[in-house]
View (cartoon, rainbow, N blue to C red):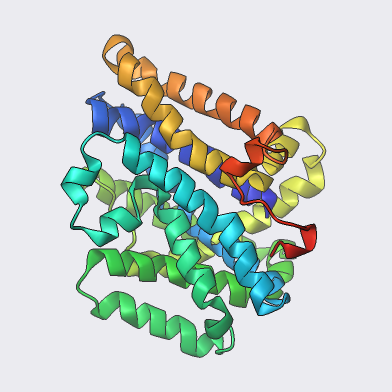
Length: 316
């Protein structure tokens, strides 16, 4: 789990280090880099949602009050802190979106935390339903709603709760060998080829939040989980793998920190450096994330990422 989560975070940094200079400062993104990011677009955020859903069972083993208090400290707190910081420091954001509740509730990159809060809020109720009720109902919702924002929410809800229901099966998935794994990777390769082809044709993300991609993305998550298990078994003690796993365990820090850091870097340097601002954004954001993650368990730095609790037992 930590290997997958850490890999997704590092790839997310790669995307934002190239997209922030492009969308906000007009720096041309190289085509090869756009297509490289496109390879992982259908996988990055659904995988993070799936992994979060796998943790729902453990959280629900706590008393309901402890469950909600823990999620308020670990999710609602950083959502308010970093979402508020983003709104207050983004020029003209409040003036442009003062009457748009969804824009205010999911400002820019912080949407991921907003979605998780909603999923964990409804988790105790939804988890009581069998998968054959919940997942088809969510899939149907993605088809009948006319709002893109609600479709997007439903799309990620499916991966979150699929992670919850699939948790007991993941041991067999990660230990699978032979032809099932080979067929999975063939399907992944075909899906990726179509994704790159269609994206190149239209010049924008083709499979982003589209329900037609859901089966392929689930296969992709299973295949990469199997691969991560093999990597951990063979070179799990290597420095690179241990670093990726550490990033996965500290994913909340890297997630909330990277975007504003990249903005601070790109704002004065985009015009001067051109395309070279992309690696600078990545390196600086990763470095700042490492520094803050190293101290994220100690006061007062921990207040940036988690509300204080009276005891460790309060955590859910």
